[in-house]
Amino acid sequence: MSINSIQQELDLLFETVAAFRLGIEGMAGDRLAQFTEHLELLLVTVPPARLPQIGQVLNDTLLAQQRHDYVEVADRLQYELAPLLTRATVTTAET
Amino acid sequence: MECLSKNLQILFKRWPHWQEILRQSPARDDVQPEQTDSEVSLRIGGLLLGSRYNRWEEAWQQASLVPRGSEEAWVYGSGLGDLPRALLQRKSLKTLRVVVMEPRVFQAVLGHFDQTDWLQDSRVELLTPPEANEVHHPFGAVVPELMLVEKVDGVRLRDRVLLELNTPFIGENQGATNEAVREQVDRNRERVLQDPDVMALRGGTPDCEAFVVGAGPTLEAALSWLPKAQEGRLVVAVDAAVRLLLSAGVVPDVVVAIDSHREGILGHFEGFPLETLAQVPLVYFPRVHPDVLEAYPGPRFVSYSEEMVYQRLSVEIPRGKLFSSGSVIHPATDLAVQMGARTLILVGADFSYPGEVIRAGDGRFDTDHLRHWIYNGQGEKVPTQPNLRGYLRDLERYIERHPEVSFFNHSLDGADIAHAPLWPGRAQ
Image 1 (cartoon, each protein chain N blue to C red):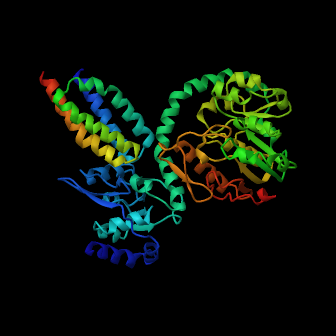
Image 2 (image 1 turned 180 degrees about the vertical axis):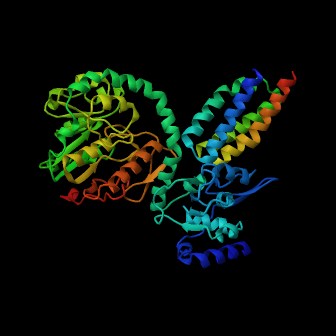
């Protein structure tokens, strides 16, 4: 996956976060669906040891979304998932 | 306790009536502080009220909905106080109207966080529903507090705020599907040219009583008394209600169709002899599939709405407009009013899933996964979807604009529709 694609995926993530914090439910759900659709491509760049943690964050995010806990969703994506993926992009750039 | 008492001192000094509001608002027992290394937030009713990592950044993001330089702004949901604070930092702001959407949430926040800074800012006006019952621009919102609203007036305002927040995205989405709709409108051009204007029906039944019949689940219960009640009254039916009405021996006076889907709409006209409708006018929007219009046996009348997709055609072929905000109930209601209804009874306008049924005549389905809800006429929560909720609130706004008409609801089991009390004639 190219650095540009990774950045686009991260931009989409932060767009998703903003939509959840603002309560734009339709956009938030749509952007989250787009993000997770391409997430698999990003995950192949992640060291395997990190995958369980990412999986747990994604699972907690989904549960929060189901109960309409939108701030929790935004927090999980912005402060827990993004750092895990961002460390992955540094790794990719270095390789 | 010290925090609470300081907050209340300012609150009651500026707004004494809040003593009574809080007296009537029992404390919640589902309030939990949540803390990380960087931040403290509150979880109320299972929902985080503010970010537990960076509340201030979140507040700035929410405040970004209010253009810089605005002299007035509204906030729906005071939350943890961060959004009012963020906006009050703007020197240009002269008035900030903060609508406390849920007093019990506000009370919990007062007990955990110092709110005195923004509460004592002279630019702040503090309101609650129904003092505030409409969405004013520019505004920001603390959506978790909206999700915790319980009171009826708060629920109505909640839905209006959520609808306003989501409207730009809905419009953006409709742009994508509009190409297909635009093609369908173009294909119907000749038919639109030939078919008479819906305005020809205007005033056709002056000062009448009318039933506007939707296909919501409560229509089924109405089928037992509608045949007799129909006598002497106008019946305007949405397309999806026709089959059930005919099965009960009720032939509508007018049918309204606005949906662009072929199979879905054609399906409404199956299962009975079509010639039954040979004398029944169909009022349609040009987005309706040509095959549906071709199949319909009765006279057709064309109408536009305010949608942009009709703009070009309406200049070329002028026709009247009916109110529509996404639900066929809207133009059906407006048609009845324009035809002359001064008493209008909504039947099957449920905007929800009472009895866990989607539509009259359907079986039950599992609604456990549906988190959105509205109140029915009995004061009970019934599951719904965001789009149905939006249609309901837009219908209520329509009703508010027509004080010359008495609106009623035939059932308490579907949506509680503001300004449409239970129809007293139902008991007859």
